[in-house]
Image 1: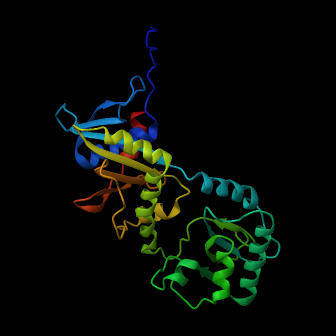
Image 2: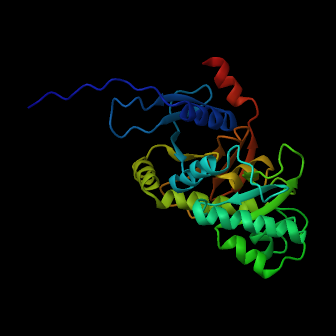
Length: 290
């Protein structure tokens, strides 16, 4: 029988370490063990109440990266970074999605559509605002022709809004979250975001791993990356999601923060629903210690 191969220890990633420190800060716990890749089946972190040594929490950390949306962002960088479109006299913010079409004919259609909006004096069109008159995520609601909403929706775009005509923005397309008048609709995206992760391969692995924990409370910490703009907007504005996520019983507590919103974290459990915590300064403390 061959001897078992000895594995070299692997240090935790910075995002994993930050997640553990955030949870420790909120719960007044401390880390008493971590997965260094030398054994199978270990959770990312074991946490114990401050001043005690016996772990009561098993924490798994994951980063939910939407490969489809990241591919769109990469295409947008190539298509629009530094580009000035000659048929536009104003600058535009465009809220793209993972389903957006951004190259070739779609790019030409978008440029022509924005030029038509300029000619007609249309400064903003929002699919969400059309579907829900109470959504003010792109500003105070106004009358929108169905044809304009249909046109941007056909390109997989959520909203467009003019941002000015000064030389530094005129003719340029900027992509991201619409900043004028942030609405609570962004918080509606939080529960399905968690559910989408849990339904995927990485989520299934976390559920299986935490399901094997019997002597500690199983917690999952989920990081949203910079492409998930609505999650960052909801965190930055301290919006509470309107419903519970569908979470299997193997997981007791879910944490959610964003790489661009590290000063705020969501905490969810079945007994208390969603809560939001201010953890300002925690990320800086990690930087100082490293």
